[in-house]
Length: 146
Image 1 (cartoon, rainbow, N blue to C red):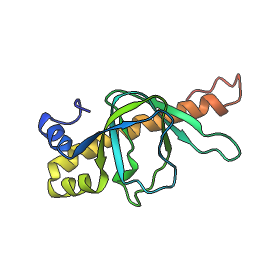
Image 2: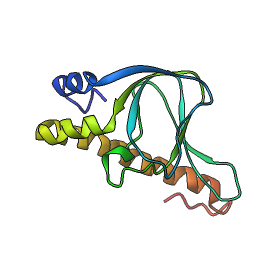
Image 3: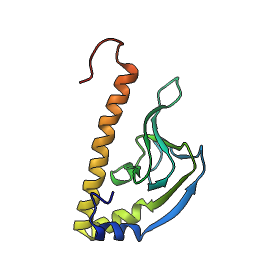
Image 4: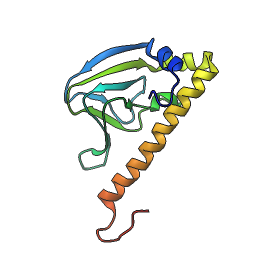
């Protein structure tokens, strides 16, 4: 995160966070539920998953130190697009989404910086999800990875 946000913007964002400890096996959120907060991981592992009818959720990505957990809080209708679970005990900074959106509205430079940061995260997650789904569902031996 610090590579995208300036020291000033990072400090302002951290002013509205609270440290939380999340037990292994805890579901942070479920696909389709209201997205009212997000986290930055200090330690531990959180997996992102997607519901597949008739099967267990498919893990798309594992997140760790310094990574953003959750981006659906930034875009109406503020509903989670994926699910997330703590695979190990997790220590993280938790943010109230409404508070951060109000800060972004009040300070356009901060809003732009956070928007760019989250946009980069979304682009990375989309690419990672595509690769993971191709690995899972592409016909074996098709040779197609593009």
